[in-house]
Image (cartoon, rainbow, N blue to C red; front, side, top):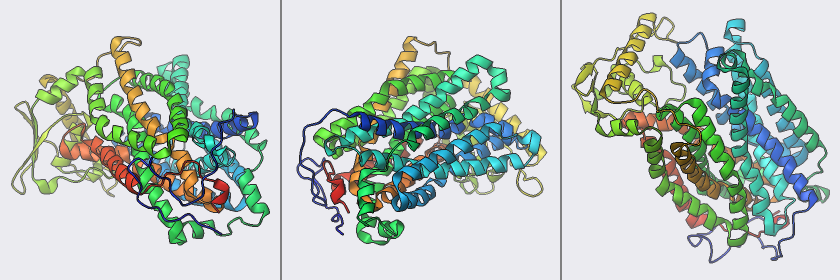
Length: 584
């Protein structure tokens, strides 16, 4: 058995040489895509689009989920718990990668990622049927979180299976193009989720949608599950894996081979820190965080923000394939590293341009209104706890900072002597945040604190409006100049995402031997996307609250992308043209 050689420092964009870890396949003219190849791509793509559709339905409807399943809590705490349930799906994705990756390398690609789609589809359908808190009490949120965990586990096994299956069918000269179709699926799944929600809301009306119509997109997943499962059942096993198994060369311990042998573990670590970590933060910042930014920071109407993002996603989806095909011609590294570099230098200007276009009054207030938080620094906590509740942040400093950060306010800090009471100054007006008191048992704040917290937030909102902060962004008419300006900015973000994400699948597949490929590809991908990417909103909010700057959270994706650029430029091998059959 041969193994890839240890990665060596490469020229900056990988153009001058190719890693010698495996022989390259002879160059061949690009043949047209055959009917069989199109069927393979369709079978893999439909399933992963469906899985991402399922996964993002929950994220996009977190407010309604909070209301129906965490209704016993104060609204702000209920929303935090709903986001926690969403984040739980990201956290368990690497464990799903281990479970299903091992299964895929032991028994085969086809039946493993058929199993993942069945688990994902059934759990999503069950969310649509699950009674709310008013009907079955505490059991409702407990069952919901359990379903989210199952969805995350299934998604952890889906991506690796789909891209490995496609790559092991693809000709070497077009592997970047073929696998790039899988890379469009996260974007298309998010777009489909947004369009189905918008369509359902338009048909049943706002009131009915919030009462029961939100269940319809979850229930529709059973149709997608039936179609996707039927197509996948008709497919054959991956030819490379079948040949390996026929020769008795399949791994009997893919986890041990992948992570217990330094030669392979080093490639896994390189894939994580020299490729996937940067790809993950660029994708989440450029697409999902952009949606949150429009709604929660810029105060754009939720329906308008969703439509803007959906249109931009539709326009940019083909670019994943374009950049995947380009990586077949000039190499994976030039495309990947250029995208990372553009993200590093472009995120701040693009998000600031979105602010000026969508809510110019907010941009003006952030620049001119003087807001100051004065407090004893010892009472100011780190705001990045992903399971945070109001009871976790009870000091006056924390109450003030969370209220201001939630309103996208730019504010400064001033240290007061130990023991001093916190205060907020908004254009000369002084407000004193309450110190919250936990209720008996310590799981919530007491009723007096709830009332004091609501009153303080209302007073802060009124003072901000009086000082010039807008309560809402101005209406943005579909097709207006502002509307198209925002679509254009979102498209630019999407193109940067496509440059990084498009060639990622081919690069991951070409790094690892066939006998452990499913396992070795899946874990770094889901560690990167589940943890580096999935926790981006929580980390970004903590950075915003800590600094008092609505844009400060962007430093997280920028710094991670910059680190990945450096590691990838120095040590990531150029993998274009590798012979996958020789990687055993």
